[in-house]
Length: 560
Image (cartoon, rainbow, N blue to C red; front, side, top):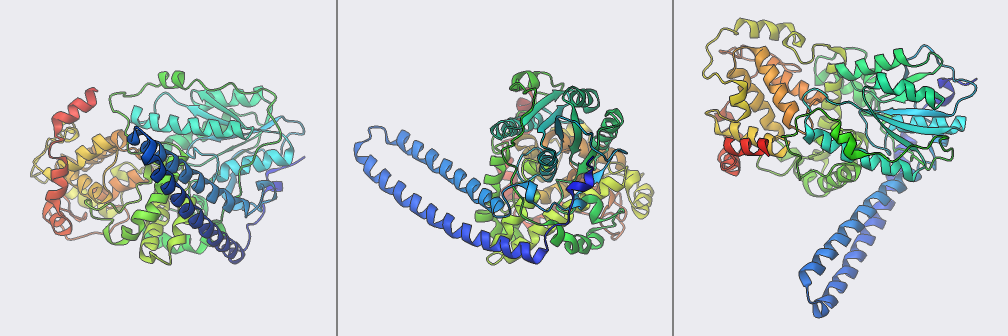
């Protein structure tokens, strides 16, 4: 009889892994650059010849651009695939770090006879670069049984709209296609996991369940409910596939701020920041083959706000995320350290939607960004601070503080100062409806709100200003927090995320910050104002970008 411990061993020494990875990256970069240059030369020759003979050059040029984009996608995928294969051919021979895994069930022993292993996919919606998926395949290969992927589609989740569900479902379609190409059963189960997953486990004689990790209240409850509903003979474990250093390994307690968790994370990166092995074609097929998913029916089952339209700038799915990552490395990383707080500069990674839905791995992002450290050292270090330290700090806060979205979750000094100034006269008072429609006296705030409503994103620097003004313009800190979370979760593609909750809590409740000079309304909470923004960037330029996209256009957008 086998147990979880049969499949967990320590990772390779960091020095050996890093040396091997650097050699791989160097070789792949040289090959990629040569191939890309050669491709461009050949395509240039083809274009020159076709200009003489083609009657419709615009259509032909458009086709060539599409071909070039397709080749670029394939080059990118090949480069990453080769990096994985240079680690090992299969996760079966990979020395998996057991610290990524924690056992939830009381049962650790696998049944003597079973037909498969289930990966219950939730937060991390991708096939490759997914430690939870890899662990499930490692188990299935060892036991010589089939591998099943199950995603449980709930009809609604907090304030998510069709904008969010549309992005997610399109990404999951990509997951289904890749699973089928690898001989892995993909199943979209309609309903809450506790109601549909245990039945699937029993019907398919599943011998073990692996899931990924989220620190948020509802997903944690889902895991508990499934654990209670699964047969007691079926082992159930969890893998943190979202963070580089697993949340429970980074720290066993609530951390006060970045300065208290930074060294803890950096000290453990050598154990966890490694190249991924590949998820491979699975040799053991499911006895009951899953039917192709009816994605239209899945969308029709949703009970969500359909007035908030999907965005066009972000292509859903892992491929879209990888292309955005590559464009960041090549075009914006050089400006990230110096210009990331300027809303008029195109210096951000723009990766948060794909990271939020788990369509791309933060670990893959860091592996690719680090390849540019020799050229853009400051940008690489700044990105690691935000994508690793600050993001994992947000998971830490939400996991160890059940009041992560309430004033009660703030530090003692912050709760006291907010209470002391709760009755202070506000310079302006706005309702949630007025704020949602961007009907305030502040053109910069209105522009930020309009950007979020129309584009599904708001510049990171403006998110701080935006939330702090809501504190200044509403009756109580809790009302301000509720409104900021509601608007963020409803419109931003990366809403309902630990980063979003911590961002609002930092702005309004001083989480991960310190006390500042006391003033009206804010007390000792850090203050931001319009004049301060004008000193940092050209406010009027940002306002002009959205001056014609006023609240009437927002109404039209919502009605459409």
